[in-house]
Image 1 (cartoon, rainbow over the protein chains, first blue to last red):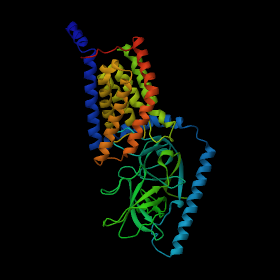
Image 2 (image 1 turned 90 degrees about the vertical axis):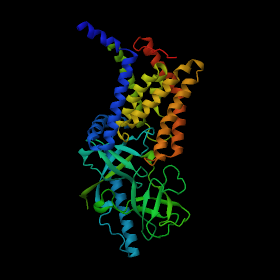
Image 3 (image 1 turned 60 degrees about the vertical axis):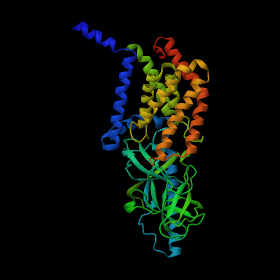
Image 4 (image 1 turned 45 degrees about the vertical axis):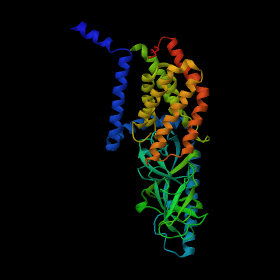
Length: 280
Length: 170
C-alpha cells in the first residue's frame, strides 16, 4: 500500500506536475477574476492586504519625507486654496450672479498633504489612470474625498488601506466631473473618454460637454461645479483650460478639448481635502 | 522540491524589483518599459511555455496587487501568463538567430498592449494608441540592455544545477 502510493508521486513529477500546477493556478486566477467582477466586496480584503504589505515599501522607495517640507507645502496649498477661493468670490460678487450655489469652497476645508508613491502599470489589460498616495485611513482619508495639487484638481479617492489610498485621476475610465466654465459660469461636464463621433484626443486631453446651448470659447477656465455635500468633488477647484472647440455637428451640447492643469505623469506632492473639518 | 527554492526565490526577487522599480522613477519618459514582461520573457525563453506561463502568472498577480494595482483582480495575471506562454513557444527558434529572444520579448509586449488597446476599444478602460506604442518601444529598448542580463541569471541558475532545462518538444 505504502509502496504503491510512493510510485504515484514520481509519476506526477517533472513536466507533467508543472503543467497540472499551471492549470490549477490559472483556474484559480479565473475564479478570482470572476469573483472580483461579480462581488468586488469579497476580494477587497485581498487588495487591502497587498496595499498593507507593499505601500510602506513604496513609501520608503519614494524617499524621505521631510516634516518641514510637508509643513511648508501644507501652508502653501492652504494659502493657495484661500487665494483662489477669494478670487472666485471676487468674480462672483463682480458679476452679481447667484450661480455659485455650492456653499463650501475647497479653501474652507483642511488639506492633508500626501506624496504619490505608486503609479498604475501601463501594461494591465484594462487601461486606467490610478496612483497610490502615502496617506491612508490612519490619517483620516476616506473613499470619495477630493484630491488636489497646487495646480488644480487631481482626482478622487477610490480605495483606502491603513497607510495608503488609491486615487483615480482625471481622464481615468468612468471619471466624469461636473464643471463650470467661462466668465458666466456655464454648466458642463468633463470626461476622459470622448463621446462617439468626436475627433480623437491626444493622450491626457479631456472632453468638455456643455449643458444646453452655452457657447464655449478657447481659453475658458474650467472649474469644478461641486457635488452635493462635496462628495466626491468640492466646488471651485481649477481643472483646466479650453484649448480648442469642436465643430458644431448639431448635437445637443457643444464639445471642446480641455487641457488639464495637473500633469498626471509628474505628480508628486498632492493634498486630500478632508471634509467636515473646517479650519476657518 | 528543495532544489527549486533558490529558483523560486530569485525569480520572486526579480519580479518584485521589476514591479517596484517604477516607484523610483515616477516621471520623465513618455512610455514606461514593462520590466515584469522582461523577467517573464527571460524565464520563458530558457524553460519553455509552461514555465513562462507560470512566471507570467506570478508577475501578473504582483502587478494586480501592488498598489494601485489593476482592475479587475486577476486580469493582469492571465494576460502575462498568455504572453509568457507565447514567448516560451518561440524558444524552439532561438538557435536560429541571436535576435529571436529580443523579437519574442517585443512580441510579448505587443500582446500585452494589444489586450489593453482592445479592451479600451471595446469601451472598458481608457488607453491611447500613442501611449501603447510608446510602451512597446520603451520595452523593446530596455530589452536590448536587460534581456541578456536576465537570460544570464537564468543560465547561472541552470549552471548551478538549481533549475533544469526542459526538453524542447518537436
